Amino acid sequence: PGMFMEPGYATREARIEYSSERLRLLYVGITRARESLIITWNTGRRKEARMALPLEALHAILEEKNAAA
Image 1 (tube, rainbow, N blue to C red):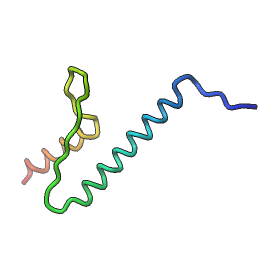
Image 2: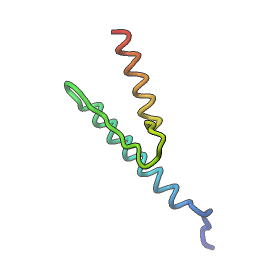
Image 3: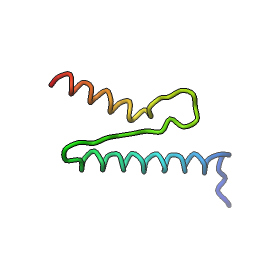
């Protein structure tokens, strides 16, 4: 018996894997930065220029930290 997957399963899994790898690289960059760290992002072709959710959360944390300093 073969394993049946729903349509788009492989594509969704590939996007999840790609996103996971990008988050791992972000973590490595954050944890290895010694003096400063510059994070950029691509808004793509969409008219809506919005950060990815993990970057929005990171931005909020950094703003709170800077406000407390």
